[in-house]
Every structure is written in structure tokens, then in C-alpha cells.
Length: 211
Ligand code: 5GP
Image (tube, rainbow, N blue to C red; front, top):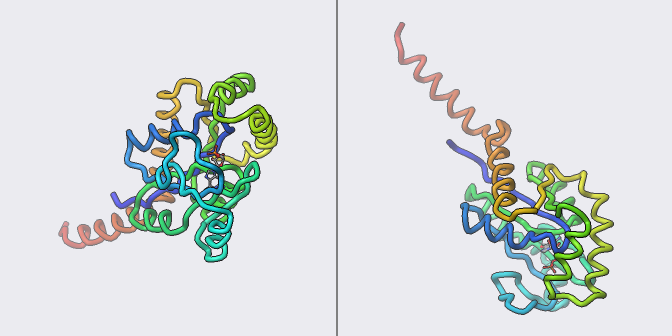
């Protein structure tokens, strides 16, 4: 069956476990994952080119000028952007591409790619989110406070997403996100080529069969 690739946007509150969910999805299923560029400092263990393409502000602003991003945004004082070439190449190959980006970027993608599927990952409740951010231990209290404030602001945008998935149990969450994407890929609007091929084939068969 000739299917078009699906562009999948996964957003969610800082600390909700987006990175882990996305990593598991990519390990388990055949998704292409876009690696973003950022000006933020690498966290311990993060690898350039794998977790992010780490850039200076000057390098990042050059890429903006050269139309190198399909979207970019500023988030808690750093730039983040989705490289154009990788995403366009993978979609052209018919691959399902995951972008793990924040809400401004997601809204921007929806405007440019109306067929994109927007999934918002959330925690079971506010206190669980706060505890997860604190126990990650990678940010100081000031940054955590900023990220929680941003999370509050992001509640305004949750309803603009197509799907809301709760990350309580990691494995269940991964299966729920995969199920959403699978259902999207079966939409008739995503299978227009299949419909026209089927029509053509059946038209030939109909003519060949003499009643
Ligand atoms: P973190 O610093 O925790 O890795 O990421 C901060 C936020 O930036 C997260 O919400 C993450 O999803 C978002 N982000 C990562 N890459 C991109 C990107 O390419 N574009 C946009 N708009 N947001 C991104």
C-alpha cells in the first residue's frame, strides 16, 4: 500500500519524559528522528549530532538567514531549530518523521504542514511534573522555576494539539503514541495515491473480464 510519510510533532512540558518516550519509539519502531540545533550548553552525557547539533548564537543566526530551519524558536533564553534538509529528505522518502519540539515551533509546523500530527505529552498531574523536573537533577532551582512557569503558560496551547497522551507508565505511553500515529497513517486522506491506483487497476480488470 502506497502511504505518504507522516510528520509527527511531539511536545510536552519540560520534565515530562519526552526524550525517553521518543528514544523508545525510535528504538522499537521505524521512525526517523530529526536532531535539532540549539545554542544551549550540552548536559552531561549529551552528544553533539546525536542529542542536538550544538551551535554558537552566531552559527545559529546564520542558519536562520540561510533558511536552514523549517521552524525555530527561543525557549528559556536559548535558540532551538529543526533542520530543513533532513526533514524534507525523509518525508520525500515516505518515512514517518518525529520532531520533538516546543509549542511555538509546533504551531509553526501546523501552519506549514497542515497534515502534521500534533501530540502533546503530559504528566498525570502538576506535582508529578514538578517532582520529575527536580529529580532529573540537571538544572538549578532558578531554571526549574522558569521551566515550571513556562509549563503553566503552555497549558494555554494544549488544546491546539490533535492528541493528548499521559506519560505515567513509560511503556504504555510509547504504545499509545505509536497507536495514534498508526491510526493517522490509515486515514483516507493520507492514502490518496492508493485509492487512485486501486481505481486504475480495477478499471483495467473490469475491461479484461468479459461477462
Ligand atoms: P531541552 O533544553 O530540555 O533539551 O529542550 C527545551 C525545549 O526545546 C523542549 O520543549 C524541546 O522539545 C524544545 N525543542 C528541542 N528542539 C527544538 C526545535 O528544533 N524547535 C523547537 N521549536 N523546539 C525545540
